[in-house]
Length: 186
Image (cartoon, rainbow, N blue to C red; front, side, top):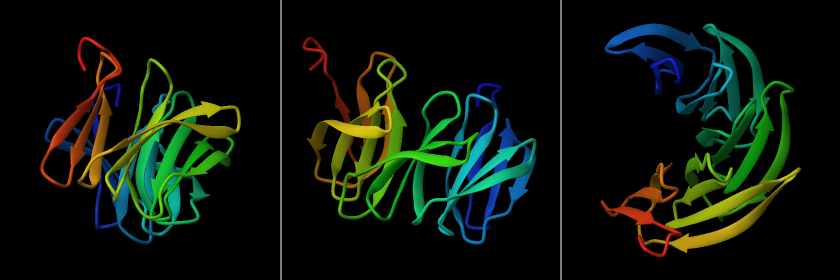
């Protein structure tokens, strides 16, 4: 989070906030393990669970629960009150966490989407799948448009956009792949 706290979710169905090595908050309210957590620009916390819900938390209390329609595997903040989620059904969804409603969705895979990341520069969202694909999506009003599809051999467990706009992917074949749109770095 912007205040230096670290978030974690666990099999014990809780979300925890940490400052250094000290736990500063614990939030309980999911029925199954918490698979993903994300901090929102407002300071609120989002948690995604196997119970097919997304919890929105403020000051240690649950504000609302969003019906995610499937097991949630990944979350990422998309600026302001917007949040991206993805899970076992291969669908990326965009939510307005303040209004508590879904704004957009796009099916990107036939099975699990394991990771999400947002590029601050372009606003694009990257989704990493169990089949080794990374999809780059652009938010356009109430829809998500596929911009690019990248293929790798291993499951894509983690994604992060770097400061220069390149995309790093942590993969199930023990590799870390960097994709670049910059000719000199490619």
